[in-house]
Length: 136
Image (cartoon, rainbow, N blue to C red; front, side, top):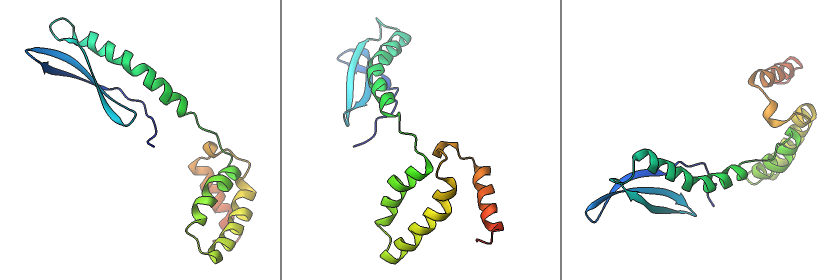
């Protein structure tokens, strides 16, 4: 299932019979949706855009609620996300050595930090410290 994202929709002029109309197009539940907003002669583009925004508001509200994600600590992320994913493609010998290295060198030192709190400089300082300790 595709994740729900914020969408603006599309506002287009379409011919319906002999009249030009404002048409709203957007994606919902995996398919393209279409709604006629009104005749171009009776409605300005600004008013049509406002009506399109009103149509999109409930969809975007649910998309915003779904995007609030769990904040992982490094140790949790490695245990719940990284290792299960990587172990599927590792041989048994690789898994036994790599898990131990990750547990000792990474989660031991960085486990209590929140994933979003890392900066590039902090990670490079961590690698420099490990290199100074004789690790490559």
